[in-house]
Length: 347
Image 1 (cartoon, rainbow, N blue to C red):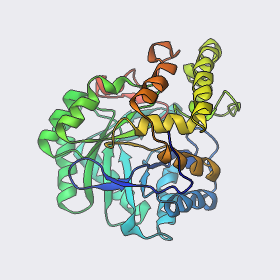
Image 2: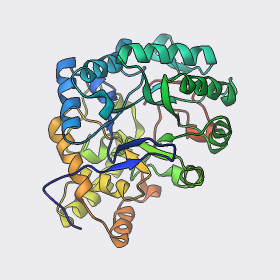
Image 3: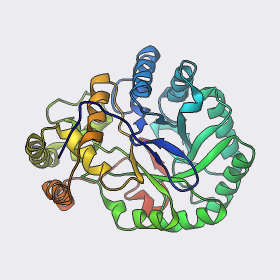
């Protein structure tokens, strides 16, 4: 493994439709309090600007992040201070808030258009680079949802279409209506379900993968291991972060930490480097509220791992030894079910 003190963020094609992004993206949801307390806009904007100045140009959001669309509003303010033409904005739609803090999924054509118009207004932009249904509404044919997204592309309001947490069948059907540029899925050392069918299909169709929660909801960054979870964090209700499961999962963290020392890097850097080496068509979007973590994440781009290194890292975190379901806030393996009727955490 080799490293360099001067980190250059490469640019790569995401999918085969023409979208070019930074090799490492930035998941913006945490700035509005998905896992921790939300940042004041001034602080969040400072993080976004620092990410851009360090070479990250791909920013991922959703109209469901934060209270009252807070995340898109924050990004809109940041864009006023940054060169819009150098930035790729991805955002998502599809959740309707219900009583009790739950959400349901909606993908009707009129709702698609209404959400897009709202995001354009809050972001203060004329177009959205990459627009996703946050989850697939199985009460509406995916062809109807995609048909409206295709119209928005033709009108210049969005440039590329993505899907999030979609099944292989849904991806094929959606692609038949209009080419899909990216599919966003949870993917990390301890959540690798998409390797079975989603990644092979995306590569067959020329679709990029946007990997959310690439550090396992912060687990490989030390959440609940070297630092305690805030009492208000939704992760306190995540089975992988609680009770006996957490104690067993700490063994996996400790194994990876020992390997990180061998490779002269931090634990999260090694976890990200492993993911980056799964293919140039996979773009991790780690998020953070701390600039020091942002800078540390960027260092993962400099790590060079051999096939033997990658096997050693994979073997240190066998997926069959991970305790707890991957994401209890979604329907189990929602990309196989193709929908999430209700959830408490849109990610």
